[in-house]
Length: 231
Image (cartoon, rainbow, N blue to C red; front, top):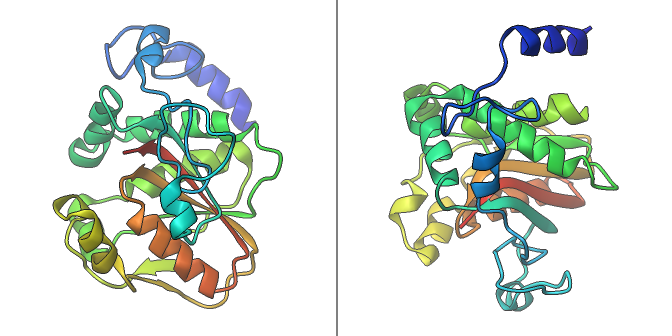
């Protein structure tokens, strides 16, 4: 029934590109030309997802070899560059929730090809004060679309942010790690062994690494990170 209603809606209100305003393609709010301009990550470290210049054979980068992060793997679709940067800015700071739907659709299409699906999707939580200021959590809105498309349960309640930290973008890498330490809490003991953290942007990886550490202590055995963009 939901698919039938969506088909009717798409026929009555066809998508338009969120970047150029032209007709969307492939049932997305993105035209084929603008989609081709998105900065796709072709090669990356399998552990932290940092973009690499060339094929790396599925191995991890030197930094992850030296100090392995808490997550088992990271997949990010795009480099954090224009025009992807513009889309995320429109979502986070201009409340353009249609962007979350588009980014969620792109992430779901990419993750649908994976052989083993996680048992649950966990969006990176916002502190309650930050949530009140913004009015929504962009990671939750993206994860909601992925959950619906892939049929993976969304858990936006078990994990909460208990410390109001300074914005990570204002800090250098080492201070980001200290800033985010012990910022999350898991309520109860979630009944899952394989989880995927969903985020919009991974910059240094400090936030998702700390969340992965928290999930690991709560009993998760395998933790992936699914992100839209990687710096």
